[in-house]
Length: 267
Ligand SMILES: O=C(O)CCC(=O)C(=O)O
Ligand SMILES: [Fe+2]
Image 1 (cartoon, protein in one colour):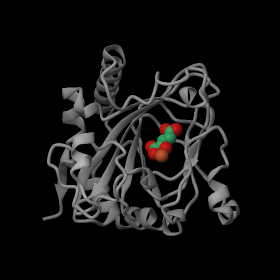
Image 2 (cartoon, rainbow, N blue to C red; image 1 turned 135 degrees about the horizontal axis):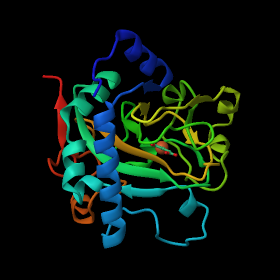
Image 3 (cartoon, rainbow, N blue to C red; image 1 turned 45 degrees about the vertical axis):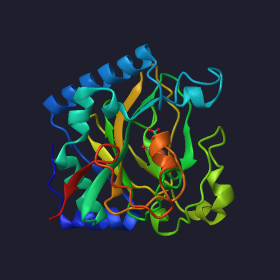
Image 4 (cartoon, rainbow, N blue to C red; image 1 turned 45 degrees about the horizontal axis):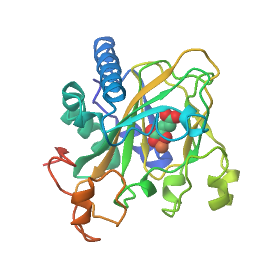
């Protein structure tokens, strides 16, 4: 895992709100990530484990059912994934890019765009979550080459500095986000093709989406979203366990060591 970051890379991330980390995983690590992701997703779907499988639920003919197979919090149901996701080196990389003192896991998720899968509409991530932070972020690790043909990510540079925590759902209209932020139509979108094993890191307020998968093979990615240590509850339950969320007041620090483990701190 390539954890070294240059001052230029940190500045680029801070300026644009996203960065591609080429060949982040070694070929051996990529094989392990592929194997563990496949196994954790297969287990989750076969067992129909309750919780955050946002796929194979609801209407199988809906647009969203064909955006991706989306399995959330796989670290909770697969030991190998738990080990991968709790790696302090991941926390160090994203914490250094974000310039924060500590990193907690918000949630992992596998995002597998199926053959001929639908596009991922433009959206922001942080407004879905139970804390509001200008420094939240995600790492998106390509398990297959992500290309313009199969659903590479696209970003609107600098939108992390402009976003207001308003959002739209990932629906069937690619452009819904521009109804909330019409001024962003003027920003030139940037595509981020990524070789398998490369990672893309983005701020939770950077506008992003992905194209359709026009190929007959899946576009697999394993991702994890992170919360700066010290972030507080904003009243949204999102992926928090129901009983835990019921005991929280707005403003409480989200620091449960099992639900949101601290995987890295600067000190
Ligand atoms: O993989 C995709 O198509 C979308 C990814 C995404 O929205 C995210 O990682 O936040
Ligand atoms: Fe997203």
